[in-house]
Amino acid sequence: MVKQLSRTKPLAQIVRQLAQHVASLVPKGANHPLVMDVAIRDIFLAQSNLPLFAPIMLLLRDVKKSFTEPDGSPLPILDIEEFHVDAGEQMVLVGKSGCGKTTLLHVIAGITRPDCGKVRINDWDITLMPEAECDRFRAEHIGYVFQTFNLLRGFSALENVMLAMRFARLPNENAGALTQVAAVVLDLAAGLPMVETLAQWLNMASPGVDRKRAVHLLERVGLGHRMTHKPTQLSVGEQQRVAVARALANRPKLLLADEPTANVDAGHQQQILDLLRATCREEKVSLVLVTHSPQVAEQFGRVERLEEFNRVGKRGYDL
Image 1 (cartoon, helix red, strand yellow):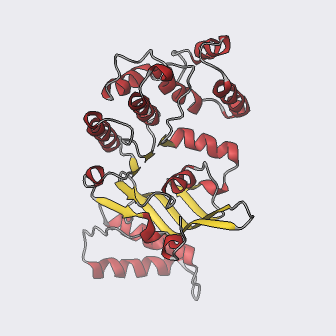
Image 2 (tube, helix red, strand yellow):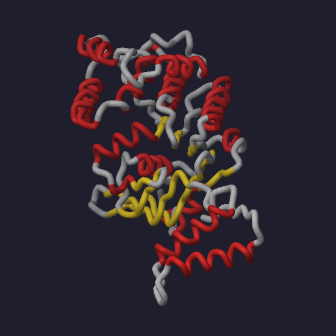
Image 3 (cartoon, one colour):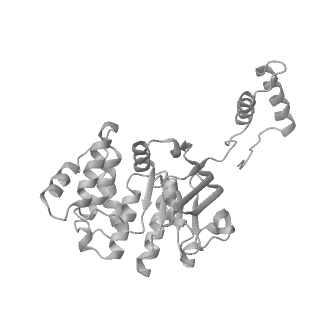
């Protein structure tokens, strides 16, 4: 995973210094790998203007995921030895329908737990987190554009974007209450009194809720004139654009986009893609985008086909 060694002195001189530094730290006859790692890092960082390692935002290692068939037999979906995305990198994931792309995104986001393996995001292993902690981490650090939007139908477009901000900034002790609130909201029909109460609780003056950013994002996806409309009053394409704005609301470190342009007309497809890429570039967000569109994929410098690094596909399973 070494990306670059930027040297300001000849390599031989650096190596000599490294040997001297290690000798001063390690007792005679000792060979402790941790001490060696620290010594190597100290020397190279002292002699370079750039980091020894290019930072990795996302790293999957030895990840496996299976589901259960009706007859009880396992259905393997993912078997990935390694997959990584650098900090600030934008890449596209392609593959045939049913090959496991959405499942992979769910595993990365912590929505679905892998059967085994490590999923590290910004050096945090989310597979070790309890469910509530993982949910909070996702709310604060990961943006997700779902295929099915998952908008709250009792709230306006603007409120949907701002709710993402509000939920991500609840104190830890409110996590249980947050789960209850979300469950109630999802079950309520639009217009019931509880929805109005929750809308007031949301109150756009709440700390951490950036109304100006929410408005700006909706304007950038062409919905400045539809901010007060609820999902049932919006077209499928407009709902998708609200979902994109919501995913960007909390300035995530990692953005996962599952077919973000699939339900949008050609005129808005490029607009949404430009918004995603420009915002990720400006805010140094890593982007993993799933698409079936060659026109979308060709705009990215890195395009990965899931079947090529998912060993399930290589073994010939019919997914």
